[in-house]
Amino acid sequence: MVKGEGYYVKGAVYSDSDYREVKEGQEVWNLGPFQKESAASLVWKALMLDWSGEEYAHFYISHSQPESYWVVGGRYKDTAFQEIEGEQEERYGPYTDYDEAHDVWRSKSLTYVDDCMVRYRLDKTK
Image (cartoon, rainbow, N blue to C red):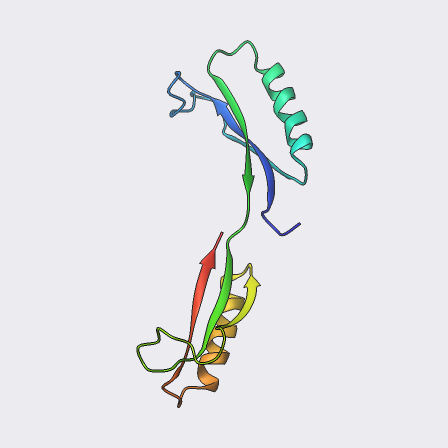
């Protein structure tokens, strides 16, 4: 499992049914990550039972995937950089750390600094 990826149980006891403002003296819960949804579901059920007497208790399960970064580019047909020369763009990654992806981008870009037909960029995905 990649850092930050998994299932989370989130929620709080709120001041009203809009579930926007946390009730004074209460904390926001963000438990996890859990590898399996079934594990998160057990925690969610336990919280719902523990807080069943509180009418504005609201907890839910969310699935999170970390952002990833790709270094994409290569040699293009012209300096409009719309059409790649060859079959497809080069892709390096994914990197879950922006700084690591930036270092790869910088290295690739500096390698071809004198070639105006080569360009690389960072793409972020989730």
